[in-house]
Image (cartoon, rainbow, N blue to C red):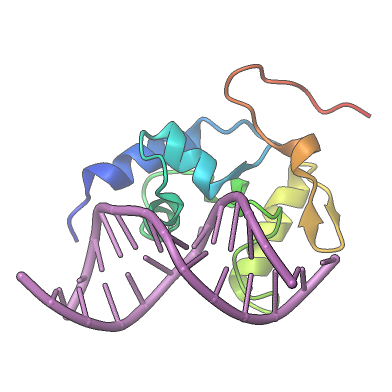
Amino acid sequence: MKIHESCAAIWKATKKIPRGRVATYGQIAREAGFPNHPRLAGYSLKHIPDNMKVPWHRVINAQGKLSFPVDSEHYALQKNLLEAEGVLFLRGKVDLVRYGWRSKSDAPILD
DNA sequence: TGCTTGACCGACG
DNA sequence: ACGTCGGCCAAGC
């Protein structure tokens, strides 16, 4: 399939998310130069070529939840990958204030 | 062309 | 804290 410019931009933005942090679809879309296109981020992440490494698991929705059915393989995989990076889940949600990535002032995780 | 589909978001009750 | 609803707009058919 053809690789679109928009997808490449989303992938690029996604790669900037540091380990142990998460970003929302809308945030990534903005970062890639597509404000008001959160769904484009979802589309792009769904079509990542196998060969290129993109930390797609660090992208979650604005509610701090994973955008997959809780009983799906994808859900389990993404949750495992995040937990392996130290991202904590509480009641099926990630605390965005704590783990959310801020491209500007990269405020750390404080207790 | 035109219509449907989203790995979404924010507001509202 | 949940579900619903309307808005959003590129992709894909």
